[in-house]
Length: 77
Image (cartoon, rainbow, N blue to C red; front, side, top):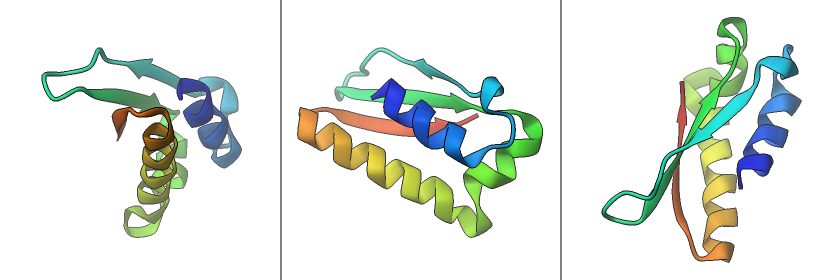
């Protein structure tokens, strides 16, 4: 799951070397939180107009997690 998020993000940004993901342990509800970190000047590319790209990233990640029987959340830091 972490690798999928990294691949998606690197395809969107101008500085792919600055992309990193940290993963939190599952919380009480069993939700795993993925924190996506990108360069400051690439934030707009990852979020998109009105958050459309960020929403699409979360949708793809959630769909992949369902196939694995997991609950996840993606946060862009």
